[in-house]
Length: 230
Ligand SMILES: [Fe+2]
Ligand SMILES: [Fe+2]
Image (cartoon, rainbow, N blue to C red):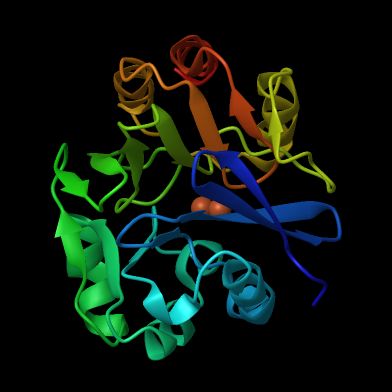
């Protein structure tokens, strides 16, 4: 697997990007007192992701390994990262802990309730349940209140490769072009309300999992997305 690139997209927040043909996967590292990796990437990406982390901090010092919902790109390499970092613990929502992590993984999760805040020393993170948005009953997202940065997971997924780490140009158009034919959003009745709730956080940076991270009026962009899917 090719090397992953790592770029700082907000103070002490790093995007780790791996390209595969036609698509890309981002993990994010918060270099806080209790370092957090948001998404592990698949097992096939583990060596590349680990090497990128090691350019910023010792992967054995990771304290939290968080993810949005249970899929291979979000948490497939959980076992590998837990094995190296003795103090690391999975971090997810209560449904994810109950249904998946507490059986499948080597350590029980720190399960966050909807709206609960975790201070990792350098970032105050709040968890928001977003069931089925864009997919997965267990789905949720974290908002870094310190930086007004929403780790928005699969929202605004952009296809293709070689995305710049952080852009201020339009990502809604490209991500809607990707969403249309692939139909990767669940068709749930509360999708619009969930997106509007995230918009009310007024994020200034959106840390997308696939494609470029984005800076701008995140509330407006989320409301626009809500209008398209709702
Ligand atoms: Fe997903
Ligand atoms: Fe994803």
